[in-house]
Amino acid sequence: MLLIATLGAATQYPLHPLFLVAALALYGGGQHQLPVAFPFLAPIVLACVNLYAWSGWHFIEIPDFFICTSIAVELLRVEGGGPLPARGKGVWACLAPLYVSLAISTVVALHGACIPFQTNHFDYTAPINALRVLKGWVWALVALELLRRFAARGRDGWHWFLRGVVLALWIVSLVALRERWLFFGLFEFDKHFRVVSTFSSMHVGGSHIGVFLALAIPTAVATALLDPSRRVRIAAGVALLPGAYTLLVTYTRGAWIATGVGVAATLVMAAWQRWQHSTSRLLPWRRLSLPAFALLACAFLVATAWHGRFFQARLRTTPSDLAKRLDIFSETLAMMDDTVWSHLLGMGLGSYPRIYYERNQDGYRPVTREFLTEEGNTFLRSRAPSLAEANRADKLTFGQRVAVEPNQMYRFRVRARSSTPSLIIFEVQERTVLHSWQGVVVAQIRDLGPNWEAHEFEFSTAGIGEGAGPFRPDLVLHFYNPIMGSVVDLDDIEIIDEQGDPLVRNGDFSSNQDFWYVQEQNHVAFQAKNALVGTYFEQGVLGVVGLILLFLPALRTARVTLGSAPLRSISVLGPVSGFLAICLSENPFTVPRLTVLVVMYLGVALAWRHHGSPASRPDPELHRGDSPAMPR
View (cartoon, rainbow, N blue to C red):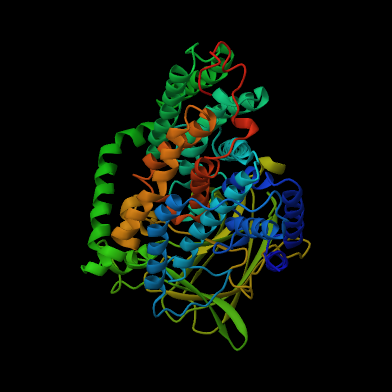
């Protein structure tokens, strides 16, 4: 029933639903025959499949369908080889405080709220944001259980998980290379342009791609050094080059430092493990040559970028930006209710954006959007706060990718109304979810009346969108209302080509936000820029204690098994070290996909702690010259 429900829900997805259903069915069949499909594909789906900027769906995402399908297949599977072993009581005791905190803080956030469940209309400032954050933790628990079941059957799932991470690193890096090539060129380090790659969730800021790289690059280093397969070692070693380039052009200093911490921890532990558990003391030179070459190439790349103006600006402003971060932490704590219960249990899961806009000291208020129905007709209302309500408003951009061709003439139509002084601006631009480049102004509509008025314009796409196939930049139709206090209603947005074909999907908003996405300018409004501060704000002391306890069993297990399973242990300890470092400047747990990914790393250490696998056996080349009495 769950599988049928999942496939049925996938048919409602706005972007190629039949293709999604077919992909899920194919994956489900593959997982049933080959269970390692889940640990191999999970990091790829979590890191690389984020289609919010195309579909407009942010509450329900592609990884949700993927995980539901995995659950359904596991429930359908006929258990073989007897019952599963009991779950470790110590592990679940460590998880209990966190999940009790999550349950309490979710109730706090949703208490008294009216929640219309619309998968295609989502607002971070609404109470339903608690369910979005909670979803990541629920899927993380599911992933832990699936990994435990694979390990109990003697499956070599952890090894395939690491290979999936390496392949995900390749995909994310190649998409980032394409992004840079299209907009500025690969070696332009002077201009302000930060890559997003496959992480459309960065439309409200946050270095989500940096969090992934802090996990994936140390994983690639460990795999390049220790994986028993020569082909996998080569693939992982070569992946370090585009991975390092992608890390560099994120221009995220926290990600730079965190990845350095993760790589250093990986190398130190690999050397220590070799020193303690081998008579030859040194890794074979064939194992070291490719990673060493990759690290030297990365150093050359950093030296090349070092003199770029934007690179230097990021380094120069580090002290002042650090002071700003500390101010953000102080302001975050100041926004909490001064009660014992708030400090113990938090202000409510996912409540930070809402409370920030209610209480921030700078007078920021959001431009709000809502879908209203009047006499059976659905339309979009965009409202900017007045000067009496705020010192300044965030610029909220509402946009959709459109298939317009370069050097063509198009007609643009829209119906609009407003009972306030108003200005609505429409543009078509070459755009990512963070940056825009060249574009054209389609229309500027001023002084709208209180009744619906139809407007029509012609515009040319001369000079934009040039290129072919994957080397053509995405063109986005977007609009915003910049006047404080304005309220603008919009409907029936259309772009018509010379053949009379419409190019805007859901321009009448009959399906609410399908195909439309938003971009916010004030990124501080959506996370506290520190995992512990953000967790304390939303979940209180209980949540912070639970978060710390989450990591302890896995890290302890990885340390204990470092001698007997070096690749598995180092591939947990190194990447998780990088992840914990980036938690000082980001709160990854506001992004469900990243929550699931890091918990899967912990699951690799926990699920296989009592189970051997072919991949964990000693590599003959790695241990050549070792004494038979030496532990493996």
